[in-house]
Amino acid sequence: MTTIIVIVHVIVCLALICIVLLQHGKGAGIGAAFGGSSQTVFGSTGAAPFLAKLTAAAAILFMLTSLGLTFLSHQKEASVMQGGARPPAAEKSVPQAPAPAAPAPAAPAAPHGAPPQK
Image (cartoon, rainbow, N blue to C red; front, side, top):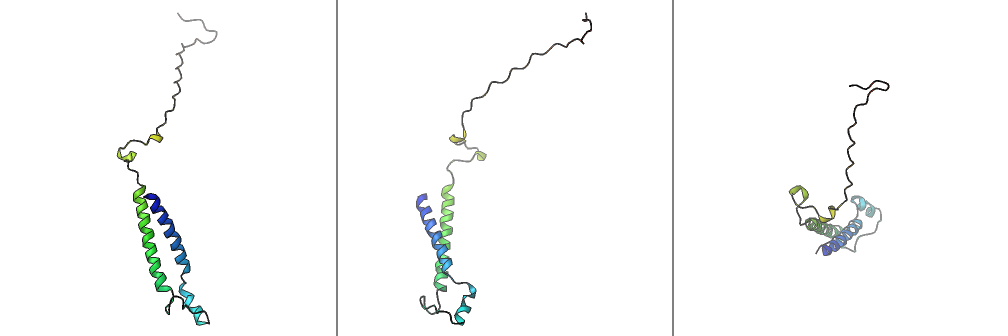
């Protein structure tokens, strides 16, 4: 299921990029006033209404696939913060090194050259 949604998501993403690149900017109407070509391919009003509706539909589909992928990507286990178990890959058995032995307590030494105390 996730694979199908990812494929649809990528196709919609590429379509949305192409649709936006096909649209003219706000200043594109000035070029036609100085002898630019007419836009008779999409009708007398041009491609603006058709491409605007197509952009809106592609954007809605892109958001829906994004939300669907977000909901499907959640793990079915509870997180560690909610008291769930750790994932098995996180727990690795690492051999513990033996603890170093504590040094034996040393008797206080007499100063050098002093006679031993009785």
